[in-house]
Image 1 (cartoon, rainbow, N blue to C red):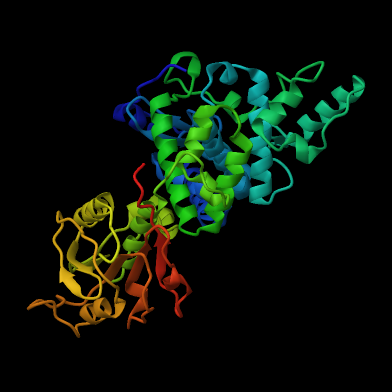
Image 2 (cartoon, rainbow, N blue to C red; image 1 turned 60 degrees about the vertical axis):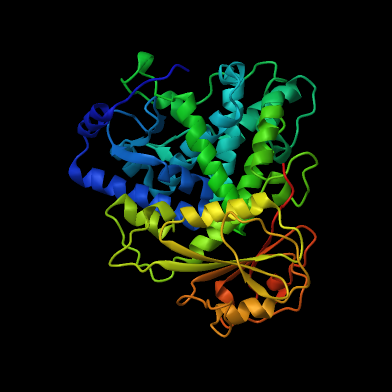
Length: 466
């Protein structure tokens, strides 16, 4: 699809193209925000994050239903018809927003022009998207407007497929097998003597927007790839950090869209899908501990911040816990972090360099550095960490809690976090404030901190070069 450019003036014009009255528009906005809130608390982690990337949510009667635009200026916008949203109600709005989000994701995953031009494949993706939407949102039927269903009913498509194959004397799949994957639906629909190419129109065939040729909704491939890539990476990071909803949705999406080509396999490999499935990649190493540490460190440093709810959409997004929407009120003191490297084993330079960069670029953080084996020693970023003798964690604990000096130096202030990079092979310790301790265990090490009582934040790092 060719790229369109929609500038600020176009978006302002869209806001004025709204024939709905103020009461209808206000109710539509309320329904939209309520739907996004429900996404964030469990319905769709992917959908929730995608709509945080849509910086403009525009009620306008320039579209008949709803649409996500991804334009040549790198901006995503959500356009929605207020009268349409009010007519279909909250469950309908949730369904439509899920549908639009999933279509944008799958456009990124299925980039082959011949597939996107194939009406049978379009129907196949409509079937899987709507099946997943109905299951995830807990609804038994499509939303309706004026008594007519909005979109393609996967069960109706399945019935037509089953009857067609029966008429040919062929055995159809059962429904669960039929809707399992995009390409599975596609291949089964191709078996039909009379392929479905003109069913009830999907949402995208109901759209009408006069910003581009032939009334097309702008979808710039580069913008779609950038936004969807960021969304999938963030959802994967949350999945690896232990978010069960994110893990379940990402694995389900991969299962339904996987198996197409090497490009898709590379995408899932970069997102660490094998680790989520409990498998070890044979040819790729993905340093998920780095993304994990960013999340954990941020959570440790968030204490003391007061969250302020922005107006309108910001209130919904903040209630979902999205960090980009956090606002600080009042003076914030600088956060203090102690980073300690275990020198009892060889510590790769790239691990030290990455941690130095991370802490150095974290806003409002003052880092103090140590190296240790049987003793605690000063360390400066940029220095090489050399191997040493035995290991004693208690000395680091004593230093962090103000009971031990290193030369004439002692810990400065009250620490907000302690990052320990070690193989874990030493006598376990019980810090006074275990919630502040973050343990990064190197290859082959002992992850005892996660089994401690109470458990401490702990992750195994990958120290081998790629």
